[in-house]
Amino acid sequence: MGDRASNGRTAVERISELELVVTRTFNGPVRLVFDAWTKPELFKLWWAPKSMGVPLLSCEMDVRTGGSYRITFGHGAADAMAFFGKYLDVSPPSRLVWTNDEGGEEGAVTTVTFEEENGRTLLMLRELYPSKEALDQSFVGMEDAMPEQFEQLDELLITLSASM
Image 1 (cartoon, rainbow, N blue to C red):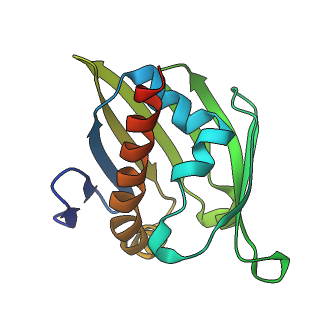
Image 2 (cartoon, rainbow, N blue to C red; image 1 turned 90 degrees about the vertical axis):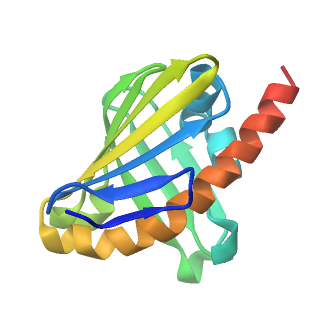
């Protein structure tokens, strides 16, 4: 497809009219990276891009196959924006699959895989959209947000590794 953005460590690539792939290698073992994606107290520390200035208000995660999540951003109830869905597959510490139900019929299905090699973790995030238009709308936000989010995750992994 050719639509690709990278900050040198995070690659965001549109691989078809319906699918987006983000890859990044983290300096940390797969167990810590998986924990950062599945434990609400850790997820809250890195998911919201700080440059957007919109704090994460709440994070509810029932991380198991058939479980659900609800993440709310905003400055208060008046401008809160929620992201929610269901976990379709949870296979610790190698794979997570969830729906993005806030998009209704246009919601994507996200698959994240984690592979460890020599103490580092290769993360691959794939999002499959039901239409080209839905992916078009999401791609710009992903190429802007994901590198910053993953930098924040890197910082958290350094802190977690130091406390082990």
